[in-house]
Amino acid sequence: MNEQGLREVVAAQTSISDINGQQGRLWYVGYDITDLARNATFEEVVYLLHNLDLPDRAQLAKLDTFLVRERELHPFLARMMPTLAQNTSPMSMLRTSVSASSAFDPDGWDESPEAEYRKAMRLIAETPTLIATFDRLRTGREVVPPNASLGHAANFLWMLHGSEPDPDDAATLDTTFILYADHTLNASTFTARIIASTLSDTFSAMTGAIGALKGPLHGGANEEAQKMAEEVGKPENAEAYVRERLGRHEKIFGFGHAVYKTMDPRATVLKEMCRQLGERCGQPQWYEIFSALEQTTFEQKGLYPNVDLYAAGVYHMLGIPTDLMTPIFALARMVGWTAHVREQYANNRIIRPGSEYVGPRDRTYVPIDER
Ligand code: ACO
Image (cartoon, rainbow, N blue to C red):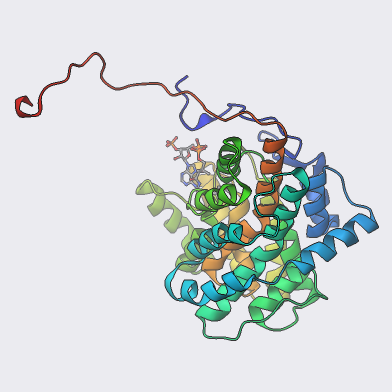
């Protein structure tokens, strides 16, 4: 096998999500992503990805109660955060904090399926608090404690901005969380499953996944897309910008995909959200710049937008600093990562692909003074 990047290789069976790259379709446990984005809440999707069915009211209420209860940071993390806020980037903070969470999880090293489920829900619950606390501290503002009366997305905006969010903004953010929640065997999820397949712990798997997500070819692309839009400045500049970048053989962030060979269905939803949000908050320029980039990148290179392009514009207009965009991706993908790790534990075999040796052969050791 000489295929770089494991394209087309099936490395795991999963009941969690599925993609058709030719048709541009994505399903979570059989539900079309567009249907879920339009109708579901993030909390329902958390339940769906972990229990493989949508919850009834009682099941959802139980999950909500657990997630709300687990939002507060453990004092160990709260004490660490000022130092992290002074010295690290947001993704490094998240990687370190999630790793540190293993030190005090009430389930400790209990690896029963029930304990793994609780650990997953705690990580999902605490990640927004980590990000918001970090941002408040690094900008010299008071930390805002979680608000038990708000849902996952609204509470994140509350902790980040220190005021109750507009319900439309909260609903918009909630939908982006749904869109980012899972995506089959992408690089970070594969990383998490590889770590879990050695029967290492959930926290190690999440720490590795965050490391994989950070790169600009994966989750880091939403931040790069926003920087690109700011550099482009106005729609008229998009064509020359793309031409110059392609001429230098540089990537256009937020475009192209390893699986989709047409429009990413998440990008279709986000594009419309970006347009509507721009109109609502009086910032139509972002949609105009991103859609000019979309048009010219397709004309010049035949590439379609992926999830990260319009997500960047949406997050920017929700007042989210650019370097928190990838941590927010992680906040949402924590659901998919933990669901995949639980699925891996339930039917495990260590993941160990082969490699093709292309170096020299049949050499004989030469003493150091004779080389
Ligand atoms: N900008 C410029 N050229 C590109 C881009 C891009 N965004 N994407 C692909 N290409 C080029 C490739 O370099 C290749 O060119 P070549 O034939 O001249 O060598 C050609 O298009 C085909 O590339 P693919 O094989 O389809 O892409 P691959 O599967 O290797 O990479 C990837 C996929 C990493 C997502 C790539 O499209 C990319 O780097 N995009 C920009 C970064 C980005 O937005 N990442 C987020 C992806 S979504 C996610 O992870 C959440």
